[in-house]
Length: 424
Image (cartoon, rainbow, N blue to C red; front, side, top):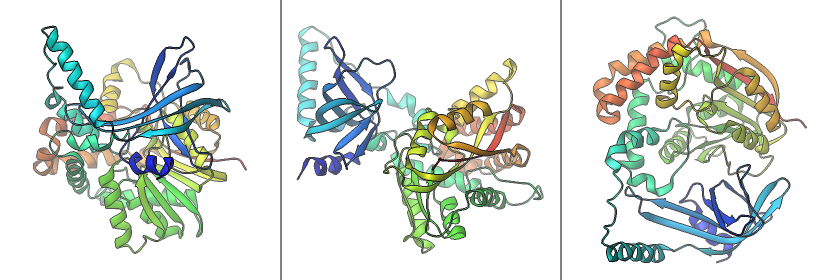
């Protein structure tokens, strides 16, 4: 087995690695990074935060996962050389150590002996049960955040299966949709699924995909919008999610529609997309980028995988006006409960697009035709309380309902359709 085969044989277990190198004074320094494979050049492109004192030379990439007590489950270490390249950094692997469990255990035993010799006890296991509500929220994931690898499945009691059950129950409560609808011209009592399909169709029309083209669907969920896009356009669609249960459900749905030959779903983090440069004719992002902590990085990745002349179409939240002090608690609750990570005004959003290499080509505020979804969500959640409470937890469910209802008071937040194109 060659070096890259060994790396690929284990890399699917992990998310972001730690990059270790020496600073200008010769001391070891470590940062969390994104590592994107470039198999054509036998290296990883890695990111080092601005201001971190990195020096080219010997370095390590270390991936690992934990169980619910933060004990190491899986480890992959790759030694190699770090080099500055085109304003960024490249890591060229030299050696792989894929089985470090014994070494880790020896270190743990040595640490225990060290503490015992000094009359000290080994610290108790991390109090995970106290963080179970947070764990459920992370696993629920509504298409943002980062994957933590196999260690996720040791969290709480259900791991990915718990997330799948939660998603299924919530989706059923919301009539099988987890994105906003487009209500213009619809009666107030129209099915929320009809409004959601109209929102999907609105983006499908704007993206204007054609047979033979390849479209990337970011934050694909359980596949409904991507499948609808493929059926309407004849294009091939690749959807990405960081949640394995979503991917499994989405691929099953594509197969059930006899579309598996041109519709597929796979793991993918928008801040380190697993595709070569210039891979797609269009990228679609439906209510997704607001959940990304580093939207400029995500937009750069979108630009990278777009072909020259490729289109970007998105729907997203933005700030139409500054949020007054008395409404800041509502915004804080949205950030906490609805995972609103990035919320800027339109000028800042457009500037981020341009900086990423995507020229904005149009925007449209459709807030009045979208916000009726909130009231419907709240009513459906209340009506499905008996089914949802055992899955989500009563307190968490109440918080979600309250935030959904309070969001109507935050008129400074708008809903935006945004288009762009990568220059040829």
